[in-house]
Image (cartoon, rainbow, N blue to C red; front, side, top):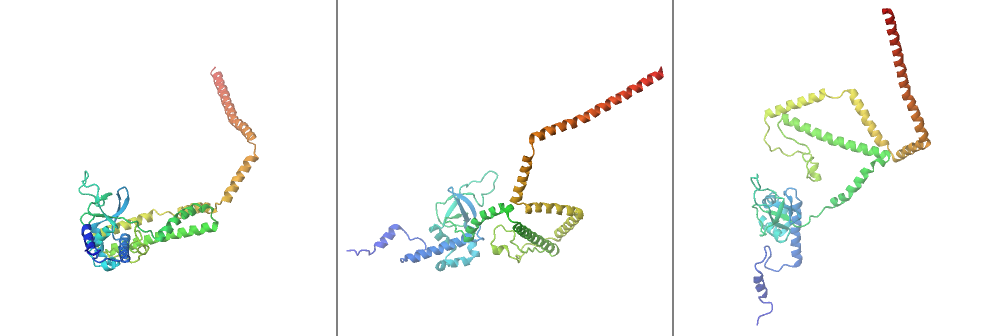
Length: 361
């Protein structure tokens, strides 16, 4: 007789096929398996949130997904091996093996471009296709292979708070005219000071770069990430410049731009406004600012009520008749004067002609 359970598990395993990659021959407790899966989930989230892994967005089965290329994934992990420490026991695994585990855990899915033929006028296929489809074989490859993230990226707490803050800020900006006068002054000086600080920083940054580039031929950008589109808060306010690894510019180019800079400076100085023009512009701007700061709903309502009171106090019918009479009289007077002057001129001409006839006779 066969013992119950003796060799049955092996037979079932043979029927099911080979074991999946990464599973040990011994049974693993459920808690350890869940912990191991969590490690790969954390690893995938860290890799996806990292700025150095280049990715794009595309349409996969009528769904927008974020995807990356296989060769970029390989080079990324080679340049940042510290991320593999999250995997603990699997930190020493090969990059291809780690990617295959991510595929098997449905954290990523291999895709292929929908358009596989060259379009008219194109010499090669698009590096980042806009439309993808699922590849039949879910195996990692770094040869023109694309992989899309299948999980929803966790949104940080500050992004959630910011999404609620933006509508409130928009409403506050729209209600600026009804703020108290002191609050308006504070907002005005704060925004003007912040704008002046940003412009001063950018101008000084450009002057330092231009001076060092012309004199020494070195590219030195202080606050190198201040204009970056994608950067963390720490990277945004990084002060020290990055190391200049480009070739040194030629002296002819430096001399040319030095001459251009001098000519621009002289041109701006020649066409600079005089003291009277600056005073007029300052007065105009100050009047506009005063109108904005001094406006209030109470003043607007009182002005509207005064206009309504003045309009009701006058009789519109009398106003119209008196006005029409006065206008007709005013228009008639010049016509009468013109007629009298014309008749007088005719009488003088006739008397002169009669005198001339009598002389001839």
